[in-house]
Length: 114
Image 1 (cartoon, rainbow, N blue to C red):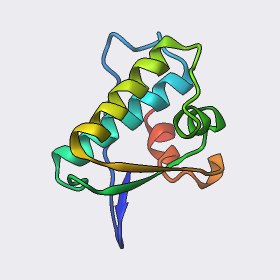
Image 2 (cartoon, helix red, strand yellow):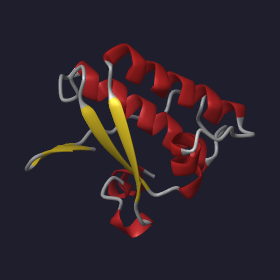
Image 3 (cartoon, rainbow, N blue to C red):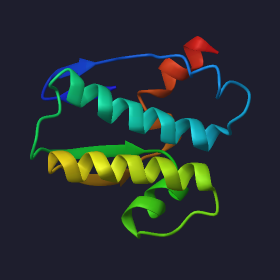
C-alpha cells in the first residue's frame, strides 16, 4: 500500500510457490516491503531521488534497518540487501517509522487473502 498526498494505491500479490509454507511472518513482511518498493518504482509512484517514509509494525525490522543491526536470519539479511540496493540505485532516502499493528492499513490486505 503506497500513499502519496490524498491518493492510496493498493497491490496484492501471492507469494511465489517457492516461499509458500516455508517462510515466517516476519520474512513475509520483508518480501512485501521489497516487492512494494519495487512495484512503486515500476509504476512511477516512487521516483529517483524520492524520500520514502516506510511505516512498519515490526520492532525487529525497524531496528534492523535504522540501526544497521545484523539479523541472524539470512533470509531477512538478503532482503535488506535488495532493499538497500534499490535505494542506492535510485538514490532514495528511506525513513522508517514504527507503527502499531492495529494502525497498519496494509494488514487488511493480508488478512483478506488468508
